[in-house]
Length: 109
Ligand code: TYC
Image (cartoon, rainbow, N blue to C red; front, side):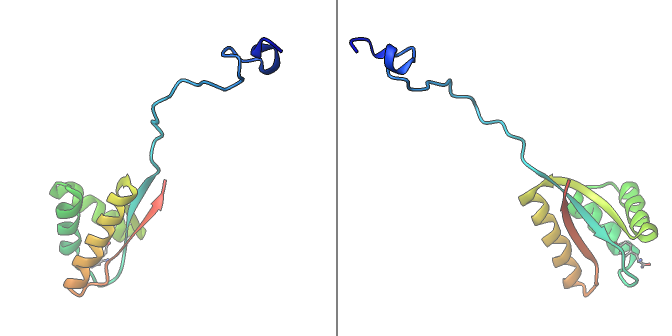
């Protein structure tokens, strides 16, 4: 009873776990921003959206637009939650302003 380490087994004699603080480096979840096809939104408008909101050059934007047009949907980019949410809101907002039914969603990767 005179030695605390007998009772508690720890190095310090009182059994407290002393763990090195590790930096938290957990990777955030990522989200695909997905553009959906419809029959009414003009192709040129979609190309402009992809250039202005997703920073694509004109040929990439045209390729993605045609992929959406032929396959039904296409990926505009992969982002963290808040960035993806903002991009979706920007696309839908711009489409609404111009009265186009263009839809955009996000899905976890
Ligand atoms: N399908 C549209 C048209 O024929 C073009 C279009 C492409 C619409 C991509 C939406 O996400 C879209 N005018």
